[in-house]
Image (cartoon, rainbow, N blue to C red; front, top):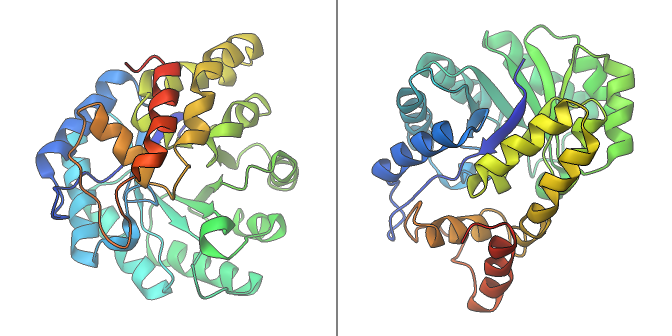
Length: 291
Protein backbone atom coordinates (compact mmCIF):
# COMPACT_ATOMS: atom_id res chain seq x y z
CA UNK A 1 0.00 0.00 0.00
CA UNK A 2 1.26 3.47 -0.87
CA UNK A 3 1.72 5.69 2.16
CA UNK A 4 3.24 8.98 3.22
CA UNK A 5 3.80 12.18 1.27
CA UNK A 6 3.09 11.66 -2.41
CA UNK A 7 3.87 14.72 -4.46
CA UNK A 8 1.26 15.84 -7.01
CA UNK A 9 4.03 16.71 -9.44
CA UNK A 10 3.89 19.79 -11.63
CA UNK A 11 4.59 19.30 -15.34
CA UNK A 12 7.46 21.73 -16.04
CA UNK A 13 7.16 23.72 -19.24
CA UNK A 14 9.14 26.18 -21.28
CA UNK A 15 7.85 29.71 -21.74
CA UNK A 16 6.07 28.67 -24.94
CA UNK A 17 4.22 25.86 -23.18
CA UNK A 18 6.30 22.93 -24.41
CA UNK A 19 6.99 20.25 -21.80
CA UNK A 20 10.50 20.76 -20.38
CA UNK A 21 11.98 17.26 -20.34
CA UNK A 22 15.25 18.32 -18.72
CA UNK A 23 13.42 19.94 -15.82
CA UNK A 24 11.13 16.92 -15.52
CA UNK A 25 14.10 14.61 -15.02
CA UNK A 26 15.56 17.07 -12.51
CA UNK A 27 12.30 17.17 -10.56
CA UNK A 28 12.12 13.39 -10.32
CA UNK A 29 15.69 13.26 -8.98
CA UNK A 30 14.87 16.10 -6.57
CA UNK A 31 11.94 14.23 -5.05
CA UNK A 32 13.90 11.01 -4.73
CA UNK A 33 16.68 12.89 -2.93
CA UNK A 34 14.30 14.87 -0.71
CA UNK A 35 12.36 11.85 0.49
CA UNK A 36 8.98 12.10 -1.24
CA UNK A 37 7.26 8.74 -0.79
CA UNK A 38 5.73 8.58 -4.29
CA UNK A 39 5.26 10.72 -7.37
CA UNK A 40 1.80 11.35 -8.79
CA UNK A 41 2.28 12.53 -12.35
CA UNK A 42 -0.16 14.25 -14.73
CA UNK A 43 -2.86 14.89 -12.17
CA UNK A 44 -4.60 18.21 -11.60
CA UNK A 45 -1.33 19.84 -10.51
CA UNK A 46 0.38 18.29 -13.54
CA UNK A 47 -2.00 20.13 -15.90
CA UNK A 48 -3.61 16.96 -17.20
CA UNK A 49 -6.44 19.04 -18.63
CA UNK A 50 -4.09 20.92 -20.98
CA UNK A 51 -2.04 17.97 -22.27
CA UNK A 52 -3.24 16.04 -25.29
CA UNK A 53 -3.45 12.25 -25.12
CA UNK A 54 -0.04 11.65 -26.68
CA UNK A 55 1.68 14.15 -24.37
CA UNK A 56 -0.15 12.71 -21.36
CA UNK A 57 1.13 9.20 -22.08
CA UNK A 58 4.62 10.46 -22.87
CA UNK A 59 4.98 12.37 -19.60
CA UNK A 60 3.91 9.26 -17.68
CA UNK A 61 6.46 7.17 -19.58
CA UNK A 62 9.26 9.63 -18.94
CA UNK A 63 8.54 9.95 -15.22
CA UNK A 64 8.53 6.16 -14.86
CA UNK A 65 11.81 5.96 -16.78
CA UNK A 66 13.44 8.71 -14.74
CA UNK A 67 12.23 7.23 -11.46
CA UNK A 68 13.88 3.93 -12.46
CA UNK A 69 12.29 2.04 -9.60
CA UNK A 70 13.66 4.40 -6.94
CA UNK A 71 10.23 5.76 -6.03
CA UNK A 72 6.68 4.57 -6.81
CA UNK A 73 4.94 6.38 -9.68
CA UNK A 74 1.18 6.85 -9.70
CA UNK A 75 -0.20 8.09 -13.01
CA UNK A 76 -3.17 10.41 -13.30
CA UNK A 77 -5.38 8.78 -15.92
CA UNK A 78 -8.85 10.15 -15.20
CA UNK A 79 -11.02 11.70 -17.91
CA UNK A 80 -14.60 12.77 -18.44
CA UNK A 81 -14.91 10.08 -21.11
CA UNK A 82 -14.78 6.49 -19.92
CA UNK A 83 -13.17 5.41 -23.18
CA UNK A 84 -10.41 8.01 -22.81
CA UNK A 85 -9.82 7.04 -19.17
CA UNK A 86 -9.33 3.42 -20.27
CA UNK A 87 -6.89 4.46 -23.00
CA UNK A 88 -4.83 6.58 -20.58
CA UNK A 89 -4.87 3.86 -17.94
CA UNK A 90 -3.62 1.34 -20.49
CA UNK A 91 -0.83 3.78 -21.40
CA UNK A 92 0.16 4.01 -17.75
CA UNK A 93 0.24 0.25 -17.35
CA UNK A 94 2.33 -0.15 -20.51
CA UNK A 95 4.73 2.51 -19.23
CA UNK A 96 5.24 0.60 -15.98
CA UNK A 97 3.42 2.89 -13.56
CA UNK A 98 2.76 1.37 -10.14
CA UNK A 99 -0.85 2.58 -9.93
CA UNK A 100 -3.30 5.03 -11.45
CA UNK A 101 -5.28 7.92 -10.01
CA UNK A 102 -8.66 8.50 -11.64
CA UNK A 103 -10.54 11.72 -11.03
CA UNK A 104 -14.33 11.62 -11.19
CA UNK A 105 -15.53 12.58 -14.69
CA UNK A 106 -15.68 16.36 -14.78
CA UNK A 107 -18.22 18.63 -16.51
CA UNK A 108 -20.62 15.77 -17.34
CA UNK A 109 -22.10 15.67 -13.83
CA UNK A 110 -22.77 11.92 -13.88
CA UNK A 111 -25.14 10.27 -11.41
CA UNK A 112 -23.78 8.09 -8.60
CA UNK A 113 -24.68 5.06 -10.74
CA UNK A 114 -22.76 6.60 -13.63
CA UNK A 115 -19.71 7.05 -11.39
CA UNK A 116 -19.96 3.45 -10.26
CA UNK A 117 -20.21 2.12 -13.82
CA UNK A 118 -17.42 4.43 -15.07
CA UNK A 119 -14.86 3.34 -12.49
CA UNK A 120 -15.94 -0.29 -12.70
CA UNK A 121 -15.42 -0.23 -16.47
CA UNK A 122 -11.87 1.14 -16.12
CA UNK A 123 -10.99 -1.35 -13.37
CA UNK A 124 -12.28 -4.26 -15.45
CA UNK A 125 -10.47 -3.08 -18.59
CA UNK A 126 -7.00 -2.53 -17.08
CA UNK A 127 -5.31 -4.69 -14.47
CA UNK A 128 -3.45 -2.09 -12.43
CA UNK A 129 -4.08 -0.73 -8.90
CA UNK A 130 -6.46 2.22 -9.12
CA UNK A 131 -7.14 5.08 -6.70
CA UNK A 132 -10.38 7.02 -6.92
CA UNK A 133 -10.10 10.82 -6.80
CA UNK A 134 -12.92 12.97 -5.50
CA UNK A 135 -12.50 16.72 -5.87
CA UNK A 136 -15.98 18.23 -6.39
CA UNK A 137 -14.66 21.79 -6.18
CA UNK A 138 -12.99 21.23 -9.57
CA UNK A 139 -15.19 18.65 -11.22
CA UNK A 140 -18.73 19.68 -10.22
CA UNK A 141 -19.17 16.01 -9.38
CA UNK A 142 -19.19 14.58 -5.85
CA UNK A 143 -18.64 10.86 -5.26
CA UNK A 144 -20.59 9.99 -2.13
CA UNK A 145 -19.26 7.60 0.54
CA UNK A 146 -21.92 5.03 -0.36
CA UNK A 147 -20.64 4.92 -3.94
CA UNK A 148 -17.07 4.64 -2.70
CA UNK A 149 -18.18 1.66 -0.61
CA UNK A 150 -19.56 -0.11 -3.68
CA UNK A 151 -16.40 0.58 -5.65
CA UNK A 152 -14.15 -0.61 -2.82
CA UNK A 153 -15.46 -4.12 -3.57
CA UNK A 154 -14.20 -4.01 -7.17
CA UNK A 155 -10.86 -5.83 -7.62
CA UNK A 156 -8.08 -3.38 -8.39
CA UNK A 157 -9.66 -0.33 -6.74
CA UNK A 158 -7.47 0.11 -3.69
CA UNK A 159 -8.27 3.54 -2.25
CA UNK A 160 -9.45 7.09 -2.67
CA UNK A 161 -7.92 10.55 -2.74
CA UNK A 162 -10.51 12.60 -0.90
CA UNK A 163 -10.01 16.31 -1.56
CA UNK A 164 -13.07 17.82 0.09
CA UNK A 165 -11.21 18.52 3.35
CA UNK A 166 -14.23 17.09 5.19
CA UNK A 167 -12.79 14.89 7.93
CA UNK A 168 -16.20 13.59 8.96
CA UNK A 169 -16.64 12.24 5.44
CA UNK A 170 -13.26 10.53 5.65
CA UNK A 171 -14.30 8.86 8.89
CA UNK A 172 -17.51 7.65 7.23
CA UNK A 173 -15.58 6.16 4.31
CA UNK A 174 -13.28 4.40 6.74
CA UNK A 175 -16.26 3.03 8.68
CA UNK A 176 -17.99 1.80 5.52
CA UNK A 177 -14.97 0.45 3.64
CA UNK A 178 -12.82 -0.94 6.43
CA UNK A 179 -9.12 -0.66 7.17
CA UNK A 180 -8.03 -2.42 3.99
CA UNK A 181 -9.19 0.44 1.79
CA UNK A 182 -6.66 3.29 1.59
CA UNK A 183 -7.67 6.89 2.17
CA UNK A 184 -5.38 9.68 1.01
CA UNK A 185 -5.82 13.37 1.63
CA UNK A 186 -6.10 15.65 -1.36
CA UNK A 187 -6.15 18.72 0.89
CA UNK A 188 -2.80 19.75 2.40
CA UNK A 189 -4.41 21.88 5.11
CA UNK A 190 -6.20 18.89 6.67
CA UNK A 191 -3.76 16.14 5.67
CA UNK A 192 -2.05 15.92 9.04
CA UNK A 193 -5.32 15.33 10.86
CA UNK A 194 -6.49 12.83 8.27
CA UNK A 195 -3.35 10.74 8.77
CA UNK A 196 -3.62 10.99 12.55
CA UNK A 197 -7.13 9.60 12.19
CA UNK A 198 -5.99 6.58 10.22
CA UNK A 199 -5.46 7.78 6.66
CA UNK A 200 -2.50 6.41 4.71
CA UNK A 201 -1.03 9.62 3.33
CA UNK A 202 -1.43 12.79 1.32
CA UNK A 203 -1.21 13.54 -2.39
CA UNK A 204 0.34 16.92 -1.90
CA UNK A 205 0.70 20.21 -3.76
CA UNK A 206 2.90 21.64 -0.99
CA UNK A 207 5.37 18.77 -1.45
CA UNK A 208 6.40 20.25 -4.80
CA UNK A 209 8.39 22.91 -2.95
CA UNK A 210 8.74 21.43 0.55
CA UNK A 211 9.13 17.68 -0.05
CA UNK A 212 11.38 16.89 2.91
CA UNK A 213 9.15 18.75 5.36
CA UNK A 214 6.00 17.05 4.04
CA UNK A 215 7.63 13.64 4.25
CA UNK A 216 8.76 14.15 7.83
CA UNK A 217 5.37 15.52 8.90
CA UNK A 218 3.60 12.61 7.24
CA UNK A 219 5.81 10.04 8.91
CA UNK A 220 5.14 11.59 12.32
CA UNK A 221 1.40 11.62 11.68
CA UNK A 222 1.38 8.03 10.44
CA UNK A 223 3.28 7.04 13.59
CA UNK A 224 0.54 8.68 15.65
CA UNK A 225 2.89 11.32 17.07
CA UNK A 226 0.46 14.25 17.17
CA UNK A 227 2.82 16.66 18.91
CA UNK A 228 5.66 16.18 16.44
CA UNK A 229 3.37 16.15 13.42
CA UNK A 230 1.75 19.39 14.54
CA UNK A 231 5.10 21.05 15.12
CA UNK A 232 6.38 20.00 11.69
CA UNK A 233 3.18 21.09 9.96
CA UNK A 234 3.00 24.54 11.57
CA UNK A 235 5.61 26.25 9.32
CA UNK A 236 3.86 24.81 6.27
CA UNK A 237 0.45 26.25 7.09
CA UNK A 238 0.99 29.34 4.98
CA UNK A 239 1.93 27.22 1.97
CA UNK A 240 -1.11 24.98 2.37
CA UNK A 241 -3.25 28.09 1.88
CA UNK A 242 -1.01 30.34 -0.21
CA UNK A 243 -0.53 27.76 -2.95
CA UNK A 244 -4.25 28.10 -3.65
CA UNK A 245 -4.41 31.90 -3.76
CA UNK A 246 -5.12 31.36 -7.47
CA UNK A 247 -6.18 28.16 -9.23
CA UNK A 248 -3.79 25.25 -8.76
CA UNK A 249 -1.16 24.84 -10.23
CA UNK A 250 -0.63 28.56 -10.90
CA UNK A 251 0.86 29.45 -7.47
CA UNK A 252 2.92 26.28 -7.04
CA UNK A 253 4.48 26.64 -10.48
CA UNK A 254 5.46 30.19 -9.61
CA UNK A 255 6.93 29.00 -6.30
CA UNK A 256 8.85 26.20 -7.99
CA UNK A 257 10.26 28.65 -10.52
CA UNK A 258 11.33 30.97 -7.69
CA UNK A 259 13.30 28.05 -6.24
CA UNK A 260 14.93 27.34 -9.60
CA UNK A 261 13.16 24.01 -10.02
CA UNK A 262 11.49 24.89 -13.33
CA UNK A 263 11.05 27.66 -15.86
CA UNK A 264 8.19 30.17 -16.04
CA UNK A 265 6.00 27.96 -18.22
CA UNK A 266 2.28 27.24 -18.01
CA UNK A 267 -0.45 26.56 -20.56
CA UNK A 268 -3.53 28.57 -21.35
CA UNK A 269 -6.16 28.97 -20.12
CA UNK A 270 -3.94 28.98 -17.01
CA UNK A 271 -1.81 32.10 -16.65
CA UNK A 272 1.26 33.06 -14.63
CA UNK A 273 0.68 34.16 -11.03
CA UNK A 274 -0.42 37.79 -10.84
CA UNK A 275 2.12 40.17 -9.31
CA UNK A 276 -0.35 41.15 -6.60
CA UNK A 277 -0.55 37.55 -5.36
CA UNK A 278 3.17 36.88 -5.40
CA UNK A 279 4.04 38.49 -2.02
CA UNK A 280 1.61 36.18 -0.21
CA UNK A 281 3.18 33.08 -1.71
CA UNK A 282 6.70 34.41 -1.13
CA UNK A 283 5.89 35.10 2.54
CA UNK A 284 4.55 31.57 2.95
CA UNK A 285 7.73 30.19 1.42
CA UNK A 286 9.81 32.24 3.86
CA UNK A 287 7.75 31.00 6.79
CA UNK A 288 8.45 27.46 5.65
CA UNK A 289 12.18 28.18 5.55
CA UNK A 290 12.50 27.63 1.81
CA UNK A 291 14.70 30.74 1.43
